Amino acid sequence: MQAAVTANSDPPSAVDGGTHQSIARLDLLLSALSEHPERGLRLAEVCRATGLGKATAHRLLSGLVAYRLADFDPESSRYTVGFKVFAWASGVANRYGLAELTRPGLERLVERFQDAVYLSIRRGDQAVCVERLEGGYPIKTLAFKVGDHRPLGIGAGSAAMLAALPQDEARRVLAATAKERAKFRCSDAELGEILQAARRSGYAFVDGRIVPGICTVGVSILLDDGAPVAAISVSAIAERMHLRRRKEIASAIAGEIRSLAQAGGAFLRAANRSRLIAALPR
Image 1: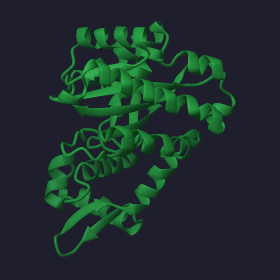
Image 2: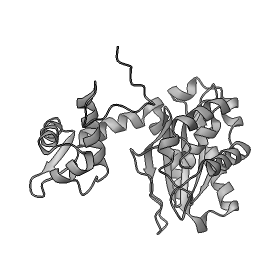
Image 3: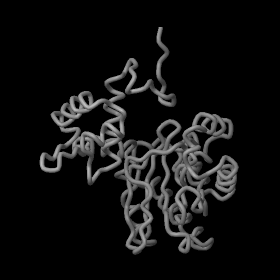
Image 4: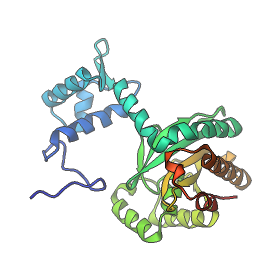
């Protein structure tokens, strides 16, 4: 009997085969296209990015276009992610009603601080960006786009969620994601310092270790059992993230999260509000 592939394990190679080879190949193609949302990719570029042969890639891309999961521009001969995927992503973003509930708060944060504001949700051992609002400050800090996913601990919102886990669970996540985290500019020792500081203060702060020059503050959103389900974060250039402003941003995010308890929603109706609020910085 073939072992099942879990949400946190590596699937078989999409190129070489496996039980879910077709799905794995489609995942490869859509992931490659999503890396170039505006410019798109030509067939040869898709093959280089995915390792798929020309005939296989062309056949699968044609299927994606037929089902509106990809678009093809005959003038430029480029493929892009289709708007149908965007519609699906919108449904994911609104898991637990989060997108709808948090949108007003995210807009207030971006209006107040004029820096980039993000909403990320937890998916297993990953944090997935489901909402990003750009601030009006001229220097942009948009290192994380909607749909991007990172292992828990990489990025302030992601680190805030990891810090909110019981330490045994956090250690398991760190062990499971060690290989993936090694791709980022943050050592285990540095991440440990970030997590310890987050547990003390109630918010995570990443000072340019992931993306040089960009600092981010993140606060987690907890369920009734204390489990982190999502996080809100704000990023800015280092000059705009001195300690006083950092604390001001964390406090403002916390206030918006507290207001969610009054707004309702499926994911908060079952929550123990006192426990949720107690975990937030003041």
